[in-house]
Length: 224
Image (cartoon, rainbow, N blue to C red; front, side, top):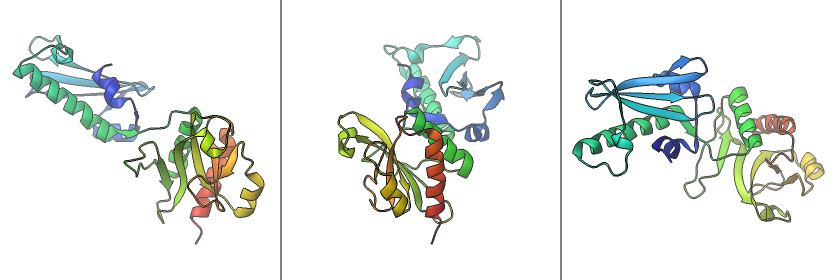
């Protein structure tokens, strides 16, 4: 696996951050370039629409691509310095232009994209011991209105043990009583079971339905 794939495997680009950092648009892709190693090399990076990152070094003097930093067995102080600065440049791009994304399910991503587009909110990963858990919260009062989690299916009472992605959302008690069926909807996992509902993010619940529930949860989080 290349350095790029390793560093960016659990991250997604944030276009406005990348543009602010210095990336430039070329069609649907983003490109960035700057000198490296006191100007001896030109470092170039690209982010394609899928979110994948590629990068290369060009020797300024010979105008040829430099590849020794990619060869595991290549030794020496100079190669080591080039490799170190190259990786530092990639890490800086990740920190400035990407956000973490521990959720892989299509429904999870669609719901997170919706929250970002509608409310301008991005997931916050609050727990070092639970790196696959994140929350969304309102900006005005900092109250949570969604928690994205991973859990073994049997913990929800389902007859299987695979790990599933779920979302916890606020819900009025009377609606929760009517909706919790133990198949698609459950009483809040690790939340108040009278006012939070848990929904599967594996496609069992349609994305449109989840968007409506997210909107209602956002409203409820704004009530005093």
